[in-house]
Image 1 (cartoon, rainbow, N blue to C red):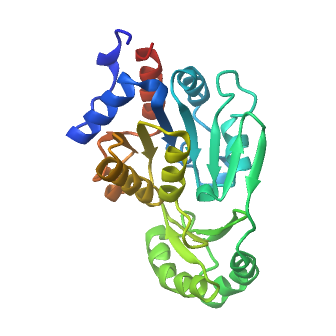
Image 2 (image 1 turned 90 degrees about the horizontal axis):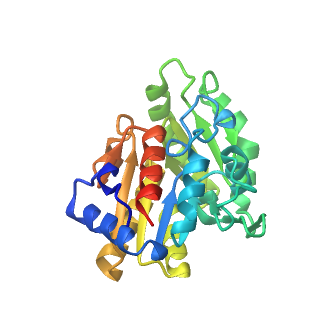
Length: 282
């Protein structure tokens, strides 16, 4: 181990300190898993304009060769996350994995291809119905639809009262989703309609087991990351896999911060953590 351990932010919980210690002791058995938006990329009004923090790719490229695996776990399509992150063809990231659409899609850097199963038919039905539905309930002004391939999302960040619009839409969108066999996943002023039984927790546990990890770090920023937090808790309790839970920012999603072992003030601080970790490991 290098001599820079002191520069690493220290987790506030015993479980988090155990997780960090396990990563440092056996990095070759550690999985570093990270959300994209709000964790590696700043939140912006238009998700299509989101890009990874300038230091994210260099930090990951320095860290990846020293650990078992680095995985990006995101609700975005895998290919979109790769493009917006700038992850393709980067020396050091030859074995990066992107688990897109909550694990329904997978991009492997080694093959530069995306693998995916058949999409849920309810998504296409909701996609067709949603514009008229929003108009019929008087919610079109200030809201907008994001096409996510295997899901569709309604954003309220541009509305006159974003929080009020968000709360007003939760019930009606829940009913619309249920009619088509979907669920609604709330996030930061966004409501995503997607298939049930797919979340970041399921994707993370399956991947950790697949690669045989002995420890895991997971960093996220939104309500959609709560299942991944719960999955790490379960891995700790049921399988003896130490884990470190990192919350990127805390103002908009206090529920996540309350579950975290370590809270950092957004993507720049996450990049600093990844850099410090890479410098600490041999």
